[in-house]
Length: 130
Image 1 (tube, rainbow, N blue to C red):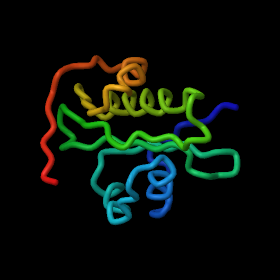
Image 2: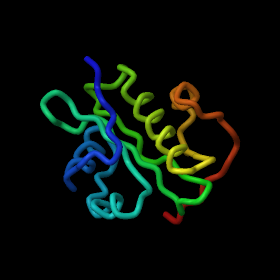
Image 3: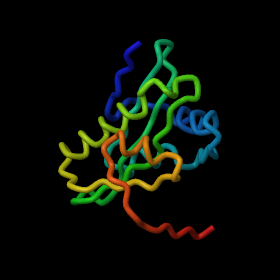
Image 4: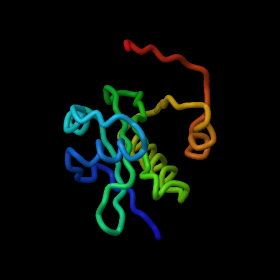
């Protein structure tokens, strides 16, 4: 089965929180629809029965640099290359959008996924207020 990544796919407010919950992340219901209003663009993939099975977005000031966030694939569809295809589509859209740099933060166990998707791992830091 081939799945199509669609930039700015119409997504109902409840769909991303439900997908987040399925992969074991917090729902963050209050983030939607704000994410769609504030990010530069997003991408999604739907299954044959029209369920949202993959999602991610790029945010930033719309200048040279963007940040890739919330890349997720439904557990039943992981391991099929959907995530890599999603990220590559977001990077292609980033280039079309005029972004010269896209960064992402990820856990060490996801290094190979992001290398396969086109990222070069580098040192960095994260600050959290909570």
